[in-house]
Image (tube, rainbow, N blue to C red; front, side, top):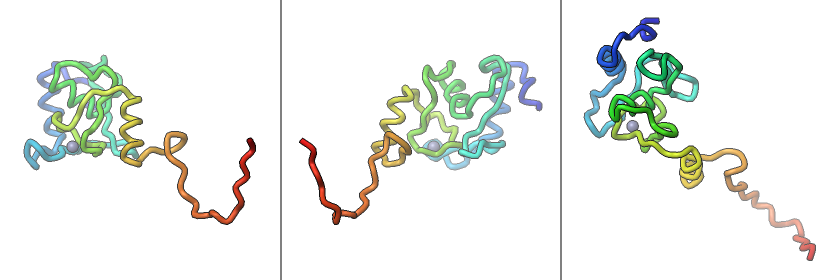
Length: 128
Ligand SMILES: [Zn+2]
């Protein structure tokens, strides 16, 4: 696990960006090339960030761009989990993220609207 022993931030920065495909240019998505979680997010551990705790790659990219981790969590404007382009990552409270998902129709569970069943044959009884 070489990434656990990155000695300095600059060493780590160089190491990190060699694992990101930025060949698409400044406005393209830059996918993380290392191992990823099933959801598509990359996670790495480095002493220079959070003392070696596992950190999502979009938070790492945010850290390298802004000099600090996002206050809440890194969110993608591009909805591309492995993307590490700092131009696509912004800091937002989780609730705003959920609301954003609802707006995009991707939310699951209690935040999502019930699906129309198309069953209008049953009588509607109003208990007033
Ligand atoms: Zn992106």
